[in-house]
Structures are given as structure tokens and as C-alpha cells.
Length: 315
Length: 120
Image 1: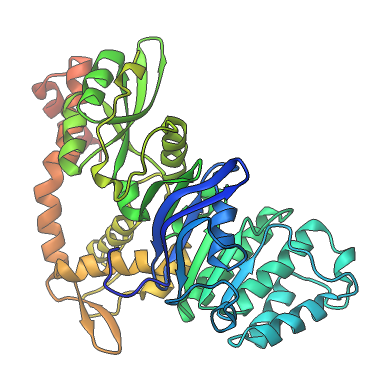
Image 2 (image 1 turned 180 degrees about the vertical axis):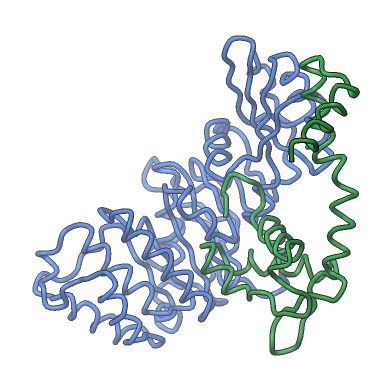
């Protein structure tokens, strides 16, 4: 971790098995206090399972999960400080929107009524409509309002925007940022829409097939890879000296995503006569997920990743 | 901020530097806060703060306790000096690389620059 403060949550050597399936495999990580962490990974990577463990919805098969210094499982003192907004959250049949909010207000000690009312207006959500008559997007809005207005010291959003249009998603991001700036808290956001939320993140946790692929701060990650393009032989020569993540070729022209150490590598690429561009978070996450062989161990603090054995990919 | 242009804190710092260089952010005036930058650019406040702190380290901004960040006296001159020293790397190098590809000599280039000056 980059700061000396105690993390909000720690996960130590956690394995989660469901019958034959291992959803999480010896995962060790921590969630920095008052940071927004993006929990990224493909479908079935283990994101939801990890969130269920953090929120005391499950007990790990092995290892230890601690939130605010203790196990969250059946621990009311800790659970009231955690808000988990699940994908496609359901509410009791007879509830109206305002009942769902009133129920949340009773559960969360830091609940802010004014914020909830503001968000209701922002999203143009009918308070008296029964939740069962809400569209998918509107149902997601209820979850988002609860997630934000709870002001829980640990708030987790698991794909919170099923059915939300681009305008509503933007409202969510803006409100999240604004409220987080005023009331810093630990936020974990799992999403497939990496590009949309990349600039909101301070930390990135990428998991793949139950293992940690990346656990780092978003800005060093952006700085840790380059996209170089140019004639095949020149790209190949440059890639040989670095960890190659992904490459594509068309005719005699090639493009490669490589891990680099810093400004010196950048200049080296330019002197090789290559076109050098930064790699955005989404490109990097896709490249790493595609490259990750199941056999490869987790890469912690990835700026010094293991050298790649995948150079043969260049062709 | 541009997600495709490298670390965001560096973009934040560069934007404030630009404002100081072109005079829109005068010396001894207050720079935007990290929360203002975060809301405006839709970025994480910690990232915005990192950009500001980099400028403090460079002596371009300084902190006034409980008030915020201000542009240091002499910041503009300092930035101009640095940019002049980086000019060759950032502009001459790519210019010469492209010129060589096209078979344009340094002498041809000098003539083109004179032409361009003449047309202004």
C-alpha cells in the first residue's frame, strides 16, 4: 500500500470453493481507506464472490477476511457500516420506492435524508411507485440512491447500473464524485464499463479466474504500459526488451502493448523510430486478461512484473 | 481529462502550467482546489491533489494553510525557462525525424521557417 494508514479491509490468502468450482484462489489484497477501488475482471472472474466475502454474505473456505479490523460475518457492529449495492437488487414486493429508502435510513447510521431526496429528484424517480412496477433502470437507481445516501464507511457497488442509460450513469458518477469529495469513504466499484469509470479510480484490482492479476494505483498503471507501433521488425526488437502484453499485425505494420519502466523506455521507443502512445486502462486490462494463462501466479505490485515468456506471439 | 493521454495527474499539472504560462492564472492568485478540479474533469480527487502537489514540489504553487494553493511569484518565468529547455526534445526532434523521412534537409527547413515568418 502506498499510504501508512490502516486499510479498511484486508483479504488474506482467501480461497472460496463451490463444490468443484474454485471462485477465488489464494487471494491476498487490501482495500485502502477512503480510496475508490475499481474491481475489474471478466465474467466469472470472482468479483461478486469477493464482494460477498467483504460484506459478510459468505464465509471463505480458507483464509481470512477482515473489515474494520474484524471478520464481517454475522458481525452487526461492522455490517451497519457496510453498504452493498448488488446487481439487480430486489426489494420486498409491497414496498414503494420511499419505503425502500425509509428502510435503508433505519439500517445505516450515517444515512443522509437530504442527499436521498436530492438524488430522487435528480433521477426523476417516483417516490410512491411500488418497486415491483419499476423498470430495470429505475430499480438500479434505487440501489444507487441507497448506496450513496447510506454514506457507509465501506460502500460496494456491484455492476450497479443494469438498464441505466448513459445520462443516468453520468449522473451517478458525478454524484458519487461530489459526495465522495465532501465525505471521503472507502468505495469498491465493480464494473465492465472500464472506460467510463477509469478516471474516477484511485486503485485498480484486476482479478482473473479467481486470482489477482493486478493490484495497484490507477495512475502508475497508466504509466506502466505503452502502445508502440511501426514496422514489424522494429516493434519486435523493442518488444523483446520488455514484457509484451499484446500484439497485432497488419501487413508489415505491427502494434504492441508492452510494460515499460519509465520515461527512459519511452524515449528508447521513440529512438527506435516507433510511434509511441499511452495505453489507457481499458486497453491494458483487456490485454492483461487475454494474456493471463491460468497457470501463472498473481502479480502483486505489477510495476516490476515477471518477464514474459510470450515473445513468440510477435509475428 | 483524456483517458488516452497517460497519467491524469500529469495532465492536471500541465493544464495549470499552461494557464500560468499564458497568463490566465496570474502569480499570487489562487489555483483551483483538488475538489474543484475533480468535479470539473470528472476525476478522482486524490488524482487531482497529486497533480497539484507535483506543482508544489516544483515550486510553481505554494500552500497557504487553511486557504488553498497559490501561484508562486516567479512561477511563469520558471515554467518558460523549463519549456525552452524542453523545446528541442518535444518539437525539433519529431520535426527532424519527419523531415529526414521526407528527404528535407536542415537547410530546406530553415528556408521553410523563413518563408513562414515572411507570410505572417
